Amino acid sequence: MPIINRIAEFHDDMTAWRRDFHQHPELNFQEVRTSGIVADKLREFGCDEVITGIATTGVVGVIRGRGEGGAIGLRADMDALPIHEESGVPHASLTPGVMHACGHDGHTAMLLGAARYLAETRNFSGTAYMIFQPAEEMGGGGEVMVKEGLFERFPMDRVFGLHNWPGAPEGTFLWRVGPVMAAVADIRITVTGKGAHGAMPHQGNDPIVIASQIVTAFQSIVARNVEPVEAGVITIGKIEGGMAFNVIPEVVNLRGTARWYSPEVGDILENKVRSLATGIAAAYGAEAEVHFDRMYPATINEETSTGLAAEAARAVAGEAKVQLLPKPTMGGEDFSFMLNAKDGAYLMLGAGRTPEDPQVHHPRYDFNDTVLPLGASWWATMVERQLPRRG
Ligand SMILES: [Zn+2]
Ligand SMILES: [Zn+2]
Image (cartoon, rainbow, N blue to C red; front, side, top):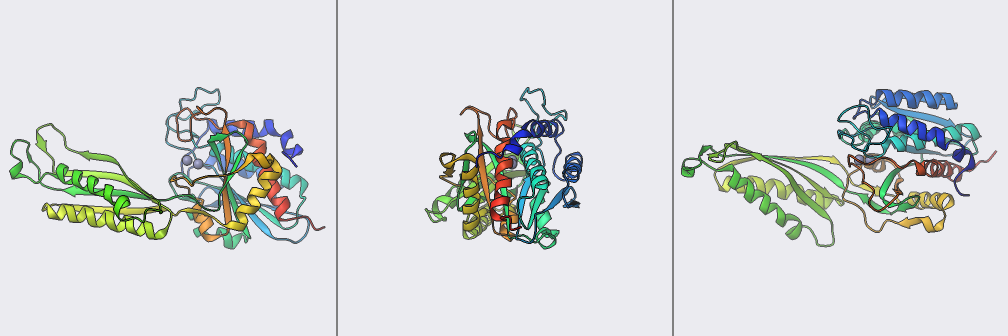
């Protein structure tokens, strides 16, 4: 069973929906227009129930099959990014500074395509939940949906997510058991010393020198404290302090991120960031205030669910186009909150036209509409295979 024929028939519709979402991108928890269209379409397709307002702008469409059976959840994200689009495509963003640079417009269109097909055909028993979440990029919309009782209100056996991946060839599915995306922390450190004339440093306490030592010391954390076969990253991406070439400032701010998979490594990174920053500052008679805010946990694929997802991908794309993702990435993904609460899996759908294609979060990125029927067919096939029709 390749791409489902009925779904291929509305490739043009899905493309039009996707481009409309692309022209009207909305940031986290502000997906009012997008979620309104999603809810209207789900109703129009004949979903049994359409629930709105979960996690502010989240939507769940309920599609019941023929007779009793299990239940699975299919999840897409709807939010855009604060990036100014430079793609030059005719359907480019009409909102300056906001853009669908991660392809969530495509994810939403694919899941709508699957919903339309499933509501129309109902070749399954049990219940399929179409989950449209807000605020994947920065707001943790997945976490809010879970906290607002997603899995209690809509009891399901498993939940699945899919992300387009321009770095992999068009039409390939990539799967992996265990970690696929990393846990993410936001690090903010304020080093407070004492300002002085640049020519009279002995009268001050230079926070630039102290901050520099802190950044340098952080390089030893992964190298010397994390077990070599485990993964971890600490990056300081921003140093801010000082106004003039001849003035020692009072304060320096550092901003960075930490990434890891195992909770033990996360604890090591946090403890060492805190102790090195405060200890080094104290040794110089200064002060460091450290914030280590954990944003997303690691995205961990459960084994049986991953097998089911890969099997559905083989049915849709063919054996040769379903590949093991050789390594997890250190990117973050808030579907992790759903996978923390429920068995499930998160796959990548290759969307690269050429190896030079702009990657996600790039101002020239644009979702590859060719893969829309593939993703929608994968969603629908998962429902039909995991919830086989009994009646
Ligand atoms: Zn993204
Ligand atoms: Zn994304």
